[in-house]
Length: 166
Image 1 (spheres, rainbow, N blue to C red):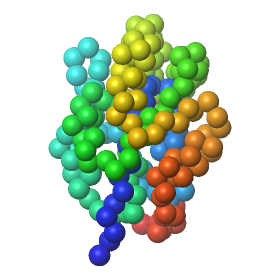
Image 2 (cartoon, one colour):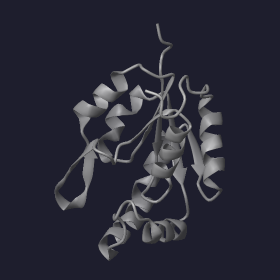
Image 3 (tube, rainbow, N blue to C red):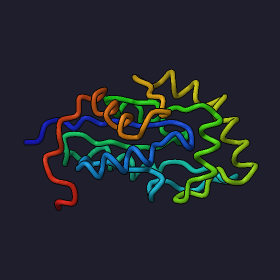
Image 4 (cartoon, rainbow, N blue to C red):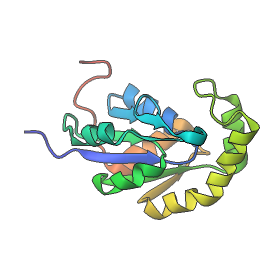
């Protein structure tokens, strides 16, 4: 029988590095899910929310020692009790603006209205995320240092299978 899965939510504003951290965790062999990749549904006004049925099912599966989930949607609060650890990834507004302007895998934040929304969310939403979080990591350090901090804060054991193993 598998040990109880430790579920970890990595949350934060657009541009804080959630996707990059998840990619590096997955590359190291951890079960790591970026909810921007098929786990959300669009809302009017350009926002999105988690597909609650899919997220609920994801959190019910126990096929790894640790499950890392990255995302920041308004309805994530419904799932907070199902996470063992919530980590807020944060960065100053000017860093977020630079990252959003230069990223290639996600167009969000490049339009003036979207960037304005990011800054509004930074003021209004990030304090709420900070209150809900168990830990906060400033992502102004190298990505590998952020991933090391995530693994240390979650006391994550090494993955049981090699990266790419099925």
